[in-house]
Length: 74
Image 1 (cartoon, helix red, strand yellow):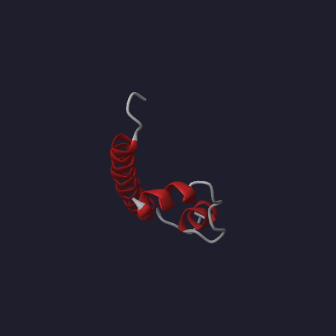
Image 2 (cartoon, helix red, strand yellow; image 1 turned 135 degrees about the vertical axis):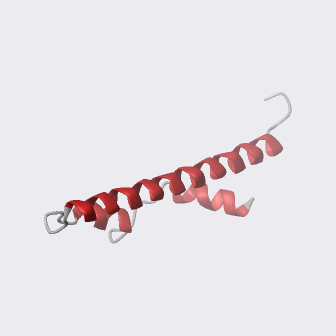
């Protein structure tokens, strides 16, 4: 339960300046070949799927906690 509460509080925090998503978004793509760009897209799509799966699990945990601690009749 503490982990769920911690995760909920993290949502309010700004993303760190040097996080991977920010660095990727600012990277110059000009030096990459077409094959390297295709590989990069595949890697990013796999990462998106991993993040979406984690979000789904986190949402399920939050829903379970809400159901467990919900006040009767609410």
